[in-house]
Image 1 (cartoon, rainbow, N blue to C red):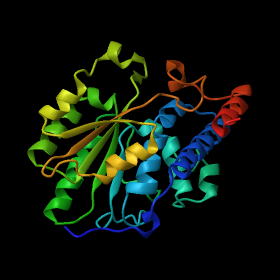
Image 2 (image 1 turned 60 degrees about the vertical axis):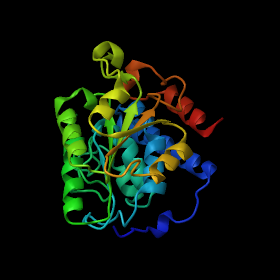
Image 3 (image 1 turned 180 degrees about the vertical axis):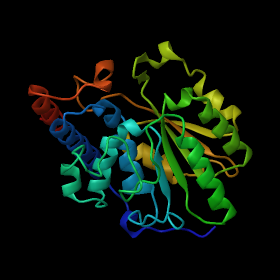
Length: 283
C-alpha cells in the first residue's frame, strides 16, 4: 500500500513537548467544563495522552478534510470523553477558539457528545456505548477493499467492552484480518456506577482479544512517548487487527479527581477550579 505522509507530523516531537500538549489539553478541559457547568471531566483526563499521541504523532493526512478516503480516521467510541477531544482539536488547529468558548451553549456545535457533521477531525457520532468498533470495522474493511492506505483508530472504554456489539465487531475484525484497524482501550478500571471488576469484570482481558485473532499489547496510558512508539508499529502484526490496552487513571492529573468514582459526573466549581488548574500547571 502507498505510504501516507503528513508534514505536520514529520520529524520528532520531544517527550517534553508532547507532555505539555497533554497538560494544555487538561487545562482547556477544566476551563470548558467550569464555564459550562458540566461534568465528565475525569473521563476526558484519562485519555489526554492517548489523544496527544494520536493527533500530534500518529494520525496521517489532512485531518481538516471531512472526506476521509485519503487520510487516517479516528473514532472516540467513549463519547463521554468528548470535552478533551474538543481540546485536542483546538490545540491541533482544527477548530477556532470561538468554538471552544461556545462549548455547551444553546445552538453551539460543541455538544456534549461529538458530531462529525459539525466539526472537522471527528468521523463518528458517539455516546451510546458499544458502537464505535462496529463502525471502525466497516470503515477499515471498505478501505481495504478500495486499496486505500489510510488506517482506522478507535478509543474504547471498559463500558464499550461490556457490550455484545463490541465483541461481534471484534469477531468480524479478526476474521477479515483488518490489520489497518487499531483499537485503544482506556483501561482505567472505573465506570459510571463503580469499579469495573465489581460491575462486570473483563478479566482475562488480553486473552479475550487474542482469542478474537487480535494482536495485543499493553502500555502505560499516561506515558505519551510509549504510546507513540506502539502506534509507530501499527499494525503490530500483518494480517491481524491491533488492540492496545492502555492502563490509565480516571481523573489523571488532578489529585482530588484521580480514581474517585464521583468525578465521572461531577462538575468542577468554586475553589476546585483553581486547585485543578494549579495542579495541571505543576504549581
